Structure formats: structure tokens, C-alpha cells
Length: 396
Image (cartoon, rainbow, N blue to C red; front, side, top):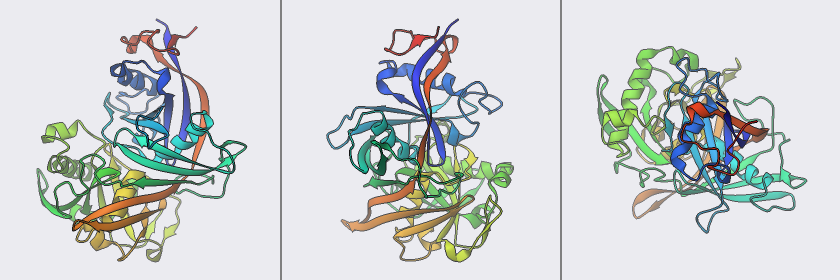
């Protein structure tokens, strides 16, 4: 049986990579998309390696982005994010990917979806997963998004042109509330763990933060060591599921298990010297808070961008666990993780006596890696008729 082929671009955004589609090139029936994405990325691989597709075997490399015309007047483009899992057929749309957000503005300019002239561009991105606006600002090089530059991003080899992302009013991205439970700190009754204090914050993406000491780590451990610690991962997943229910994301623990990408769960600690993946030592004085974050069941080598944004906002919320561990009175938070530092600027204020996040900003790099066609075996996408879109024609 022939394969389907669909125009696509392969891009790096921050510390993630994704296949990027124009919405116009996909079937009008969006219920057909998940099977296509699983086939294209080689997800649902019992070995977790995704050898039969474009995925990279870890959650940060198992992503799809879809870009189309804006559906609201304050945006230039719509951007929808799809998180896949190397070992399952789950296609999760419950949250956004901040790293891939950094590639969406450059993609829109390079594809002619947004007109840009001069030396710089600004693109207002409507992320449909969270119904939030992200403002991307970046330099131009002969009318296209600049790639060369001297900004070094921890976790990415080499340097590139910076892309500044401003997440505007990021609170309540999933739940509608910056503090979904109404409190900066709660006590969760977690099956197999017991009572544990947690801060459940929803900014850019919902996250649950616990004190690293309460889950038996220092937050300086190498990601490989955490990945090999099955008991630790089980504790963190149990906490994540309990928080999902408490935040109103899932009705029960079983349902929470079927929404793996949110909330993200993280252990945080006060600054202390840590060894980076490069073998260098990051000194206590160079950071404001330490984090080890789990996303889709895997310890991240570099903290997910939306997780970093949420953590920076949490550091500005009085009495939250991150705020008690972070250096005080910070608007620019230096977040230490296994790959180095992620620096996030969070603008916080009070509104009606409650904490309110005006914005959270961060700098990333991005690069287009390849253009062409993505191929999906017709046998694995039975509902995808070749005439479903102008480009989904059978490969010759």
C-alpha cells in the first residue's frame, strides 16, 4: 500500500525539535490528525526509540506544530501544539511547548504568512492550546529570520540569533486561574507517598512544585540517575496525578494518567553548587533556584520552557514553595538545571488582592533544519484519504 506524503518543515525551537505543518496541508477533519502524527514521528514504539519515524526517542523530540491564519484579531498566526510519546499512541493537546513557540514566529515570516521588513520582526502568536498570546521578537537577515548570532542556549551546541518571547498574561493557561486551588501552597494526600506539601501554579502551563528534600533528592542529580530511579519517578508521577485532580485538570487519578503532559511536576531546591552535563560546575552564587523537572515521565536535561516560565512566576508568589527557596526579591530568575541556566523575567503584581502575572519573558534560539515531505504509511492512517487535503497525495 502506498504512503501518504504531506509538505512539512523540521525545526528546532529552543531545546526541542518538531515537525511543523501548515494547517492548509492537513485534512480538514482534525480527528484524522493524531494517527497521522503518530505515524510520521514513529511514536507508539515499544522500544521508545522511534526508529520508524522522525521522533528522537525522548519527549522533547516527539512534537508536532501546526500553523495557520489567526482566529482572533490580536494575533498574526494561530499555532497548535501536539505532544507525542515515544512509547504510546497518546497525542496530547492539553498544554503548549514554550521551546517550540520560539520557532513559530520565524516560521511564519519565512513562509510568508507574516510580512516583515527592515532589520527586525515582531509576530503575535495565538497558542490555541492555552488561548494565550505570545509575542516573538527577532532579527531579520535579508528578509528572513536570522539564524547566526552569539547567543548560547544551555543544552544546544553552538550559538545562534536570539528570539525573545513575551508570554502575555500567562496565568491560567489551562485552568483559568494562576492559583487553581486558590492557595500558594497545599497539602496533598498522595497514594504511596503520604501527605506532601506542594505549590500548584498555572502560568504558561500548569506545574506542581515540591521541595526536593521532601521527595528524597537534592535537585543536583544527573537526569540519567533520576531516570534510573524507578521509585523516584513513581513518587513524582503519583504527586503529578494527585495535583492534576486537585487543580481540576482531571476528574480522577486514572484520567490524570491519560493526560501526561500537564501538569508538569518538579522538585526545587535552594541554590547550591551543581555539576552540569558538560562536566563544569555551576556555582551557588550564579543561580537563584535549582530545579529537576519531569515531563511526560522523563527527567529533562534542560528544564521545559513553559516549566521555567511557571517556576519564575511561582518565585514571585508569596508563600509558595519556590518563593521560599529562591533568592528573594527577584524579577529576573536564574533557574539552574542540568544543562546550565535558564533566565526568565517575570513581571508580577497584585490585582484584587491576588497575585497576577503581567508577563514572563525568555530568550531562545531556533533553526530550520529541513523542508520537504513527511511520509506516513497509508496502512497506519486508514482514515486519511489522499484527497483529504491538497497536499496529502499518495507518494509516487
